Image (cartoon, rainbow, N blue to C red; front, top):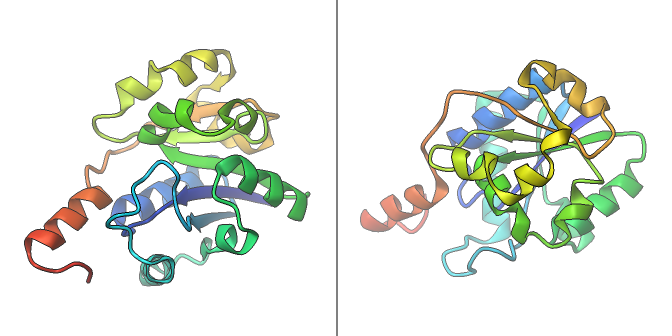
Amino acid sequence: MRVGLFGGSFNPVHDGHIQLARRALRQLGLDQVWFLVSPGNPLKPVAGMAPMAERLAGVRARIHSVRQRRLVATDIEARLGTRYTFDTLRRLKRLFPHVRFVWLMGADGLAQMGRWRRWQDIVSMVPFAVLPRPGYNPAALHGRVARRLARWRLPARAARLLPMCAPPAWVFLPAPQNAISATQIRASRAACGHERE
């Protein structure tokens, strides 16, 4: 089984997240994409963060609305008690030894990956796929992490091979870019006097 792991706060989930997950299913030949709704991202402020249960319910509702059974919303990080990607991956690989995991992220994630705890170990644990985000692509593809991992980058045309590759391995998947962001959605809601939907 091939599973894409899509971690994030999803505060709130939006169409860009769903588009990324659907594209990953198709281009990487995945069986499922798991939305790992984070109990708390160590790199994001706590202020303005909706409760975990609300964010998880939002992801489940959005997935249900697009009728895509291969997308799964999960609070497994909260249940495992992990907050860092490295710890989550280590536990998931132990719990599901026969699953081939691929980490999914937007270009903003790759641009920031050098700040992640034990990022060098993360890229040695699972292959990863990066999808474009407006305003982040050049910084991501020419940043420190991408340069360090340049020799392990697959061409986009070989993306379906990624789940079978031994890490480190990664691919940048060109795709139509969605400029929507959770930050913009929260700001719009606040401007209209609505904290949450």
